[in-house]
Amino acid sequence: MVRKTTSKQATKIALISDIHGNLPALEAVLSDAEGRGAEAFWNLGDMLGYAPFPNEVLTLLQDIGAVTIIGNYDLKVLDFERKREKWRRKKAPAKFIGFQWNDAHLQHDSRVLLTSLARQARCTVEGVQALLVHGSPSSIDELLNSETPPQRLEELARMAEADLVVCGHSHEAFVRQVDRTLFVNPGSVGRPEGGDWRASYALLTIADGRVKAELLRTPYDIERVVRAIHAAGLPKDYIDVFRQAKSLDQLWRDEDRSDLQADGGSEKALEAVLRLAVRCQYERDHTHQVVRLALEVFDGLKDLHRMGPQKRFWLQCGALLHDIGWSEGQKAHHKTALRLIMAAHELPFERREREIIGLIARYHRKALPGCGHRYYGNLRGGDQHCVRILGGILRIADGLDRTHRSVIETVRCRASDSKITLAGIARIEADAELAAARKKADLLAEAFNRPVMIQVRTQTT
Image (cartoon, rainbow, N blue to C red; front, side, top):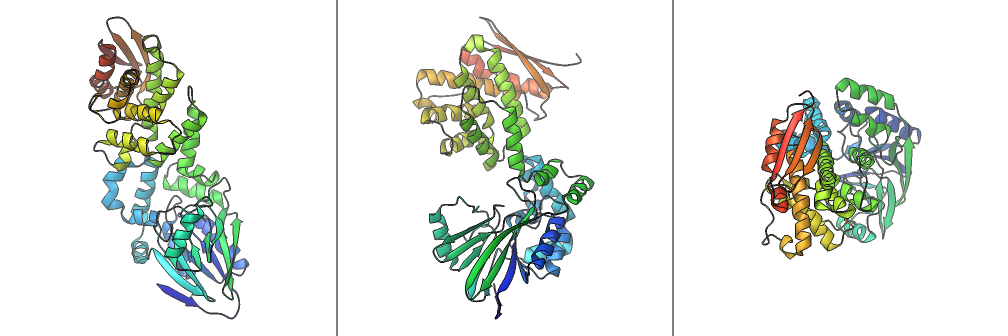
């Protein structure tokens, strides 16, 4: 799709992206841009999202005649009905609700408009050939930012065959020149990040085959958005997304980090583990409940296993990552978790540590460790024993949150020469948790060659 604009004077174009349903922010940007002489608007997609004005945003973009392409979030809303059940299991509830709300409130005309939009557009202005993309010339999902390697931008520039590539998606504003191609990202109008809540956009001045890009910020009526979120019944986390100018993942990572101490390991390693968990869209509440219970059992049995802080940290990491395999589906997700951990080169672990942590995660369900299993068979005897104990603890902790409702408040542990006893206290009925934990006590019982007895009582009994 090619649109041509000709003028003897310099042409000013406001570049906008990632509005995410935030009508007040869009209105503020349009007013600011028009005051600076903007004659046209290029919109790079993701009109839908976390603020509850999807139809109003699309109508306003039509009214101003913006050149608009579709974004990855928009496509996901259009695909919601087909993916509903898969996403209900896979996505964090707050994210699932966003897609569900937009699908339910998107009007017929808005849906038709979105369906008609292309993923890319080409425009020629004052002799400058521009390519409009949401992610990159290669993929609608590719994140380009200030840290994208120059070599990758060079590849994309060759692919684009354009003087100017404008992109969104990453919510990070930047201007980067690679050979004869200028890359410009205006940041996010409606859901800015980096701690600055003001709406972000770019103003392009094009004349005589040259482009000048100015990155701009403007305040908007954020309290109007807050009131609309309340009225729509959307998650309160969305308010923090706008007020703190952070993504849900960033908010959760900050909150998660405040709950976790890297006892026995480095802060850097824990941060890397959390980033991997977030990238794999882990189920935060369940995972943190399992981590808490696993470490409580580890500490309660310290006189039995006599393991130190380093191995406690391995258990913490394995528990944080035990369910990341769900990012590729339920089937064999424990094995998938191991594969993802082994392939995640951003984790700052030596190979031995990586294997142990991956195997702890892997053995949270299904088959017990066997020498024929990949990675496990190559470990030394002491490391195999460590995996069996820590994997056994994680297995029980996972069982104690069988319904993912975090009903177990605490676990008290006692060990003798003849048995191990775990006594859980629950805030409500926990029959499913008790049954699952007893079933999954097999590995810990085998590791210590004694039965594991588990009881759970509610606080009122």
